[in-house]
Image (tube, rainbow, N blue to C red; front, side, top):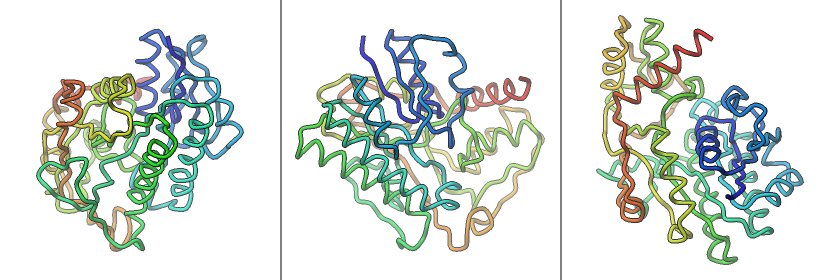
Length: 324
């Protein structure tokens, strides 16, 4: 059994990875500064000898050095995430997503640790191709628009990871996640699905930004975890990038309608201009659908949970937290 470091392990995806690793008999060090992660996401491991929680930032070189030295494999999920956070705190977000990742990669190289780096579909920017492949071009707006700083930072992170693989032989894997959703995700960082489900459960207006005709593909976190652990266990994945997500496409307006139906909500749907939701001149991508052929060919992976199940799981999670 291996020992893993999960940076950002108290976060939404990170905590689900910790659960799966422990269930598989592994031990885990979680490094998280709790800026967006929550202790509550790891409460099921309280008192466990399988999980060690370390409070701290990936910007702390000495701390990162210590935790990387003590593990076999690194899953790097610590990042400034969510459109709201990027727009409101761009300098902090850039430092975390660029310098923080550079430190993690430096220490992985120092100790020869395989590392999986979590990237994002934001990489593709405004490219609206029918199914985005890993080799497709990035199409971004002006660098003066804060909206695109997250995409730029994650692209630099990918370049760093690939350069460590090419030049120094560090075994790296890059995953581009497309709208991962599920229990424990919160809506106040700009994540649309939990925000709409929360509004529906309160019978509050469902706030759809823009026209609502922009489309996304949502994938359950449990399916994402299976893909990530499969990729990190494979030697054939090293030095490569993989799209990971669902190919089932829905408009945000359609998503709001589905959520209202599944939850039995009486909420009305209202439309909020991007300028009001975020900032003046905000730009969004109108479509984002992945081509997942590469991971399918390597692992035979495909999502197993549809959008109805995702909405039901998120609603159940939010209800349980309201009760508790």
